[in-house]
Image (cartoon, rainbow, N blue to C red; front, side, top):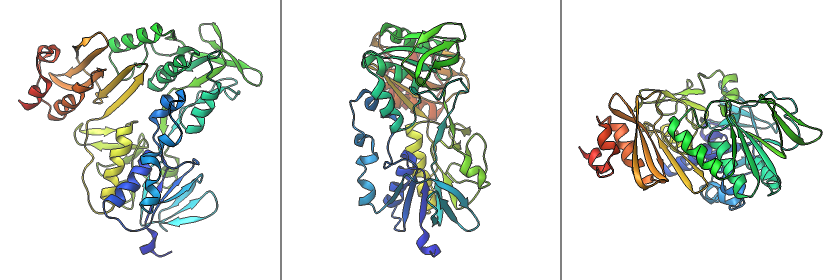
Length: 409
């Protein structure tokens, strides 16, 4: 294969890989584009896995990126169910798990992340799951009946969304969290307390400052033994203790690795012909003035678009205030910002006990915001974070002060 026909190869069939391919075509790139993904599906979005798909309210096909048909329409070749085994940087090619290979002009790494695993006795029993793929969700959903009891290890977003979905399906749910509160890494204590009360109000049991000592059973899980000595009968265990960037392929190829594949604001790695995007990256964010690794829908989409543009000579820096969301029961939680620290939290009420926004201040400037059923505050909050506008706690707390007026000043 000649260099002219090599085109762009994208490693990873998730959202970042799919969005990157589409962006190449939308940017006018006419060369070959090939996505190699190890799952037997076209590129899909992961947020529904712990919510609508787990509840049975959505089909597998509904998770496909832009309906799935966009790839054939844009002449983007898909190689599902195949893994890239190695990158030959000198020869500008990749070796595939089926023994074949592909040459590339440019390579986009969108390998995403792998689940962090716990070294627990009997963690390989039937009924014990990590949730990262469609297959994981379908397997959990099959067992998630009203008669089931599920133990969720980890009180982060994924764990809490799984617990909420379990309660909606009528199953009993227990959350085990090693920290002293749920969602402890990313939100203020008052928001942790609020969501803990919501979950308990829906019948979820929450054990904090507790670890799992062992998973017990014969061929299938039957119980979970906690560090407190308590044993909980369980039909399903879902372990959700975070993810780690899938850097194995990049590291083996000698690319720069530092808490992910290290890239600049254009998605460029230490090799000028290799870019990376999504959960696998640790990227320079000009707005935050530091490197940051994000695990979010927004980052997978927008960083991939920026990388694709840079690959075809249309560079535009990826510089955005991070945004995340989580749906639990009838509550929509949206978060903007990725602060390392803050010195004050201010609450703005939205006219309902379950509608409010928390603003995080550092040195009199907004560094983050959490909105519960109050999405209208998110866009102006992002603008205020980006601008670095000096603010007072009083004006942020006062619902009579329009957020847009703060942005304009």
